[in-house]
Amino acid sequence: MVGEITKEIRSPLLPDRQQQGDFFVCDIFDAAPKGDMASMAHPIFSLSTKPDYRIRRYEDESGKSYVEVKPSADGLATIHDRDVLIYCISQLMAALNEGRTPSRTVRLKAYDMLKATNRVTDGRGYEGLRAAMIRLQGTQIETNIVTGGEEQFDVFSIIDRARIVRETRDGRMQEIEIQLSDWVFNAIQAQEVLTLHRNYFRLRKPLERRLYELARKHCGRKAEWRISLPVLQRKCGSASTPREFRRLVANIVKQDEKYDHIPDYAIRLEDMTVIFVNRMSDSLTEKDPGREGLSVQLGAATYATARECAPGWDIYYLEREWRAWMADGGLDAPRNPDKAFLGFCRKWAEREGRP
Image (cartoon, rainbow, N blue to C red; front, side, top):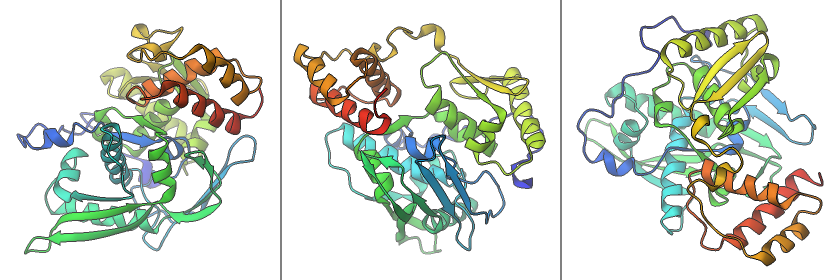
């Protein structure tokens, strides 16, 4: 697709617009950028920089789970529109970690969102934000993907509504309200989110952002993750030909080898295989990566109960997965570790079945 092709540029990263002396932005950035796992794993957002009117359907390898994405008259929501969702999720997760009860309706200042997502704050920024909210509300999703432990067979918008609460005299939005869909809000309540590197918002190319999302979801804290080009293209939702997609990925790999600009992960290409290498893998504890920074202890009786919650599974393997999941998501230690671990085991068994 033409919209995925970008010309060679001097720097692969956008300028850091946070370094402009707006001191009150520091409070906003106490909320680490976070994305929901479901839309990171599936190609919900378009990579095109032009209106995308394709109807897309994706199924997992088993054929049990699917996602169908339908555009409105304004086209599909783009991966840059996703910034709005990331900002809302980040604010609600910060509230949740502070012990406050989150709400599906988020009120925020438009200027703060533009600054936090590294966008320009002139008229172009506000117009872009308005267009993003329209596409997010207009894009329809039909899915049976599990979020928050619930399997939903629904047709819904990414956000239910967006409303301008207050404007300046010249008609520029100041405060806005965004009501998230149940699908997104369930993921927040279940803490099915991952922390993103702040330089995510500085990635210029839509495909770069999508590659980082996939690496963050599938590589996580592991040393590396390998995936074939055809499968990667399907997960990206790219409409390019296979040959063109390989060229686009090869250009990103070439720039990453020169600038190391992709956050957290280096990208390499070997024939028809793309390799994501964790830049911090040397400092990770490979045997139990989740223990780093999370020293919660589980009671002896919890392991016996966990075996009942997840029959047939190696409980110590599930413990490592649970700790790594908390570490990957930047989550605080749970108030009741035993209860949290047992809940994780139940959800794991529901999702994965018997080994």
